[in-house]
Image (cartoon, rainbow, N blue to C red):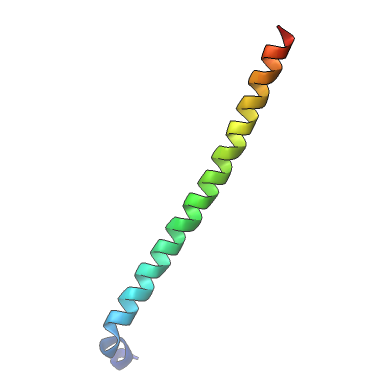
Length: 53
């Protein structure tokens, strides 16, 4: 096992970096989805308030 890690250091680092980038991408997608939902709720609330006046 140690021999595998020593011989393939570059690939191990690349895999770790890829996992971090994928995690960041997924986080940003979920953040965008949540912000879009909040924007829709705010717009709905503002439209309802304007219609009542």
